[in-house]
Length: 115
Image 1 (spheres, rainbow, N blue to C red):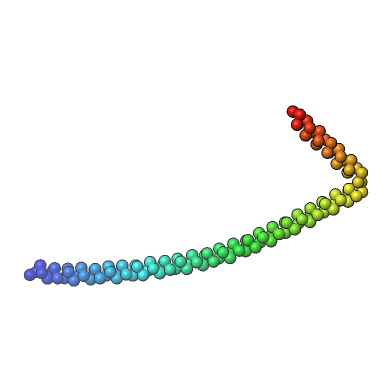
Image 2 (tube, rainbow, N blue to C red):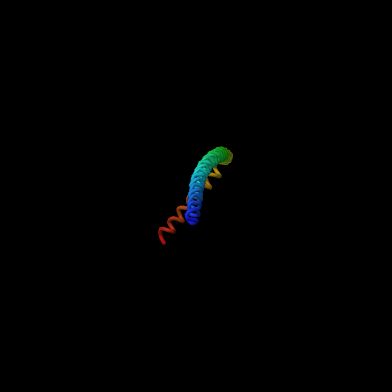
């Protein structure tokens, strides 16, 4: 009978340990669920911050591209105006230079064609 008393106590202790393990399992599941939702919130917050930063960078880049395009357009217009002014001052010189360049190019093409 001594053995029966020991088995009953051991059975009660085993049941208590089983219940403790079940509670630990439930607590762990709850904890992991909380961590998962916390991670999702952090990821969403990080995604929002990255999106805002990306939009700011895109805005600055677009502004710089527009500024560069405007500057290049102005410089191109200045170059055209300068060349027009130079041609207006010495039109005969530029006509003769253009004629000479045309003759040289034509002779080069004829030479290539004959080879």
